[in-house]
Length: 134
Image (cartoon, rainbow, N blue to C red; front, side, top):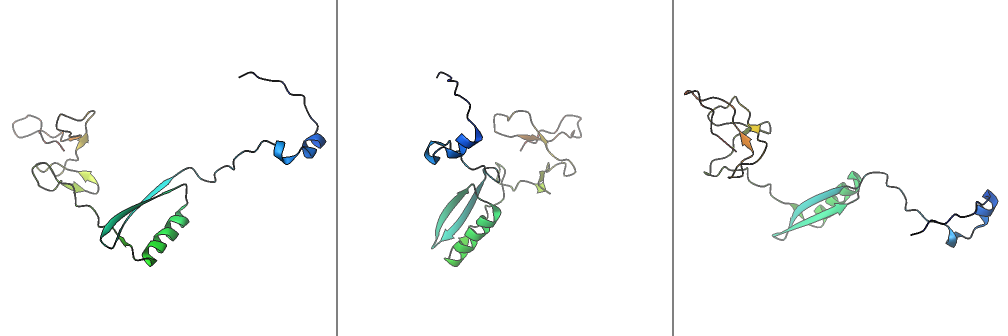
């Protein structure tokens, strides 16, 4: 693409320019692009709605419309379970070791081979580190 130098025009010439020849810019957004996902149940079927580029008021209005039409909120997923089937211990959103409930699990730099991303940093009675991973 080659740059072309255009002659400068006066304000009067700019006002008299036909609207079709003017450069149109899209309107700026009043808020950044966002996404809301709503999962509902209708007549036994799970339905998922995604709303893009909308404010909180519109999302609340959409939820109200869904409720008026007979949609119900989808059930909340079951709590996370460990590989052995026992519920993962969590308090205030922080995972804890079952052997050391006073210790919060520390995030690992990389996941291990089993996919665990949290580890207990406490020492066992024999002086070795606890091997619990979540």
